[in-house]
Image: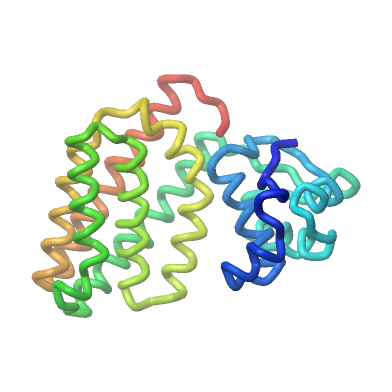
Length: 237
């Protein structure tokens, strides 16, 4: 099994003291990070005792964390076999992006209607500037991180916490696919341009343009991702 953390360097008690997390929250975030970043690859299986030993905790916080991850459709719990990371097939990605396109477009509309100041919208503008810089530096990893911040800021600023929670859960389900296809796609210059147009519509309070522009952006990028999965014959992620 892939080692999650080096407990000699990061004793659990010290981590909890620094982060303020409960044991359940820390275990949940640690396992989730390993799944989203493909350290725990699609189909990976582990028993509760194995995870508990690797993390240096009892089985109780592991069990509670795994239940949360199962509810988010990142893993499935199999009796007497522990957890299994759920692989994604192209049809899963199609469903994920259909949901994400609708939810994020609504978030763009709601955000534009809030008439926030440029200062309040700074998480968006900073992410946009970071994406532009990363493209100039040909830093795909940095671009992906800035893109992630942009979309999360769009959701967190829209004013609808339930919508943001739903969309972020769906985004997490498709995270592995975005990582895998990151270097298979064209340089995302067009995505930066489309993000910028959505931002400008939000600043103007033009909610119809913000919604429609984001919908078009999401539709185009999701179609491109599905085409990459088909072109490279990636059966699951």
